[in-house]
Image (cartoon, rainbow, N blue to C red; front, side, top):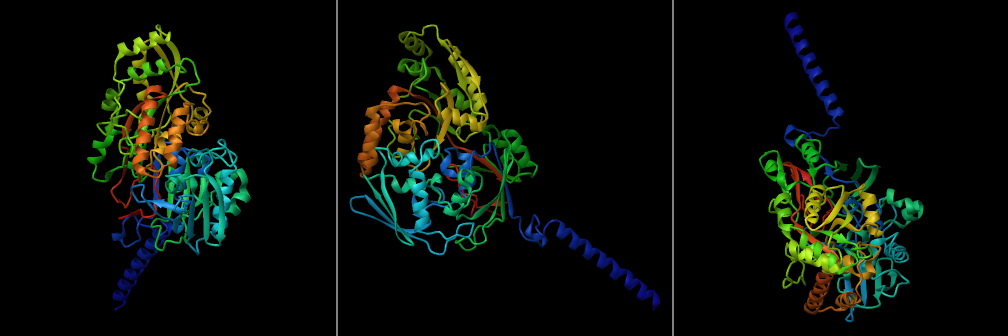
Length: 536
């Protein structure tokens, strides 16, 4: 009997020790197991690997996509795009009415929504944000030029923004602006907490406060940005994740290694040459982002000899785009002809491309007075971008091509934030850059990137043409889409002849993720709220 009791006591002691061990293990892991089938809850922290850091977390203060990848999860707009297109849907505004003359937009706002600091979202908050932006300038708020400049500029579209009552806000325009609603949905125009903006001033860029599904926690420069779930988010049951960590890993290959090793869950900037490797790994998946972009070489028209149109045309003839696409894009790209992709309405497919023709390039240089060529710096991006995942290698091919017509290009680069700032200020002569469309409208390519109104914001080539400007303003004001399309086709003819760019490529950007990531819906604009993402 005593022996049986002793055996029973030993068995109970073993079970007790096992349970204590399990309890300790569960405490150490925070109760979060990798697989729900193991009896615990699902993984709820997503680590997103990307090539560069954000330059700001106040989206209106920048034009670069690394900011918007983060801020689209912190801030919300009056209206939203569709999950994977640029159709317009309710956002912080539940509904809206447009007057017959297209000059008045009246928005009914959601009630009961709060900013992350606990303050109420209302019409006065909307008025505060727009008054802040429209009273700024290109240095502070470069993207606000989407509305024709700033409050004292002749081209400024918005006449007044007023709160009709607590949850009704009304915009009065000076002239119709066809893409007005699409502009409102753009990432830079996320609505910020007025109290937080007043509290932090210029440092709000490091202390973002919105109404979105995630709240800002911490920013370790050039390392990580951490967001956590907003428990008071107005869309019940969302977000699915508890935390997102955006991690900077500059090299595409190193980022893929981190994904393969389980250090990150999603990566952007997958090299086309690595697509087969990812597909062969049963623990990983490839995600294709819908294409709405362009990679280009900017030719700053205020720099000699690039102020000469013949020189710019010669450079266009000297670049072998097909070889670049074959070498670096694995067939997931097409050669660019115009400064906007063919998927955008109003694209002019009658324009003939500058053919790769070295003899023609030399002939144009001779006519321009540069028969022996010239020396120039070629600025190449230091980070992978959706439209150019291997910029430094592409720069080497361009350098070799230019050498064949006597142009000696020295490849230069600086860190990403400095690169963008110097390009914006027109300090580069020849530079590589690109653009992912913000709203699916031709205005967002042609006016935003190449109109004289956009010099100092997004027109990095400092190109100015009065005839083009008049066409683009007319196209903004015209509400008949067919008529708008004809105006944009004429605009592309002018740009093609003046050649302020070498349009290089429209790419299909690739991402990769672990197989257990669900509901990741890549958006053609290049950034998306991760509200519905979860793990299997």
